[in-house]
Length: 119
Length: 108
Image 1 (tube, rainbow over the protein chains, first blue to last red):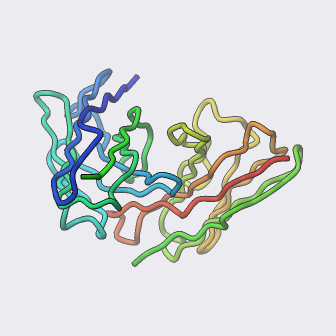
Image 2: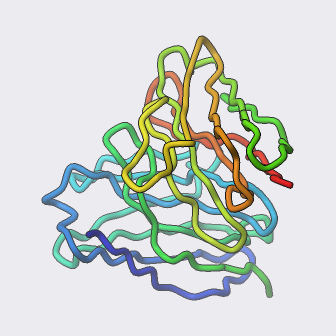
Image 3: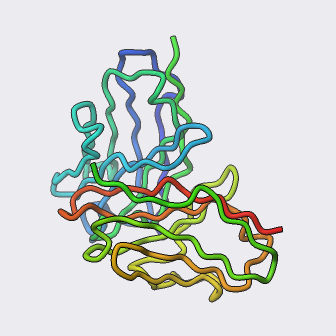
């Protein structure tokens, strides 16, 4: 049974970079058919797909965030990470890491991390 | 940009059938997925590939898709089914995922 543990700060300053990491247990990032990625949910609002990555490094990003987003994978640590640059208050959200099926649909999630962008 | 459109809210009485729709131009060629999110909780997949139900999801949840519209049906809705429901799919290229805006289901 896959379990994802998220880590990273819950506060980011405007114009800086938001960084989160997701550690996978119960399975190998490189040994599975899954994709890995991130979604977010601003307070009181809907879900937004941020992007996904395969263990080979192939990435897929939300076009509206593509210029600011990098998702990377570290197979040696069984982790994947999210970097979102130049954040503003509009990036305040609960961020979920998750594993995705071959057709890029979310199958399960980590516990979620509320990241607040504020000075 | 591509969008998936859902009604903001649906309301039914307990025992009635709730239907939540999701429209998108790529749905004739791409699968729809449905997620249930209860207050303060992470989303849960309730339907995948238009009409398949993951293990552990009650049989009253079903899905269908025709043309540009996918539908989540909850037959005999129960009070515990009150939640936000989101459809999910990809664009025509299959490389960008997206959620619908969500539908708040009220059962009372």
